[in-house]
Amino acid sequence: MNFLEKKILEEAIVLEESILKVDHFINQQLDIEILRYIGQQFATHFSDKAITKILTVEASGIAFALATALNMGDIPVVFAKKGLSKLNSDDYSAVVYSFTRKQNTNIWVNKKYIKAQDKILIIDDFLANGSAVSGLIEIGTAAGAQISGIGIVIEKSFQGGRAVIEEKGYSVFSLARIASLANNQIVMAE
Ligand code: 5GP
Image (cartoon, rainbow, N blue to C red; front, side, top):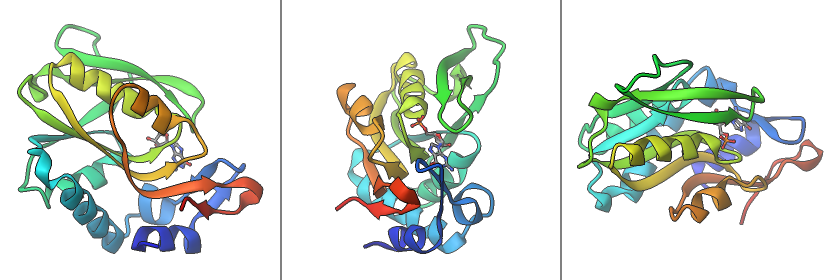
């Protein structure tokens, strides 16, 4: 069991058998030891991919994208903004369904920040049904960039996100994989 999995098992709280509350080290307060660990793990795993840019979505993905970038030669981090863009031709945008808020949200990135020659590493805090990552893939590919890696901090493997992303032809690397939250018990995948 790795450092992050141990922290989740010991400290995370389960809500409604499907949502993991990790506000005190991932989603509101950031535990810097965990952040450093996550950045190092992603940077090591994707070190041979010649990544030129990290793409995430505000707000929770930014810290992990940054921690990774600091370990990958200070490559730029771009984060998709949530909400209505001006919906003009200056932006790439996608509609994502928010698993936690149960509503559609528009995410967008200005075209200046992703170019066709970019090799993109997508980073996010959670993978549930795969909508956020799918939206980021849509934005990256609309720019003509290559999606060269997908790194997830916490994957809930009992939801369909991994299959959705793999069906699009991409592989997913997750630092912690949760097999079940049934009966409010956290069970890690093997
Ligand atoms: P998906 O788009 O894969 O369905 O859900 C991923 C997004 O929803 C993540 O960006 C994350 O913000 C949020 N999310 C999904 N499941 C959880 C969860 O169990 N806990 C928290 N804190 N956020 C989640």
